[in-house]
Length: 212
Image (cartoon, rainbow, N blue to C red; front, side):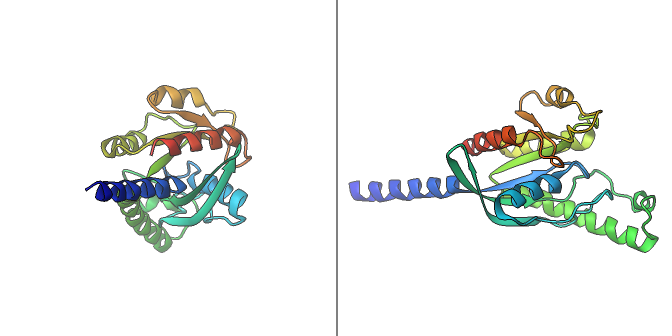
């Protein structure tokens, strides 16, 4: 009996160790908040490769993109992540919204259809991630229905969360507004575009890993 208990304990410890060594981190948020930009910066910094393209047109990312074996070393600590970059979450997608960006009607309809499928896929991935980084545009109203819906889903699943207030390089950005909107979570302000405050982000990322 003692031998069985010892073997069981070893298996549990190995399982915990493996989980700590490689975590699945999901990037979630509304369209054009900078999820892929942040994922690209991390991947570029630590693997030399980006995870996907970005543009000013909403829903550029319409399928879940993953990057395996992203090993991050920070202040003598090291963790390996699987980064899961998801399409922007939206409560409504209308193909007409794409027409103002110069897309033809057929292309706009295709993008809208793909974006809708991408949102469904993103939500399904919530069952397979260890923690989530919610990326918000710090120049926009944080009290939107989309943001509250995203956070609500994470609360229901009891998934550890780090909120990133992105685009602090812009004049209208307000990290304080994001903090006031979600006081129960740690909020870190960054610029995925310029790399501003990425040190604090990595510090928070390692703290997030401890909560999984």
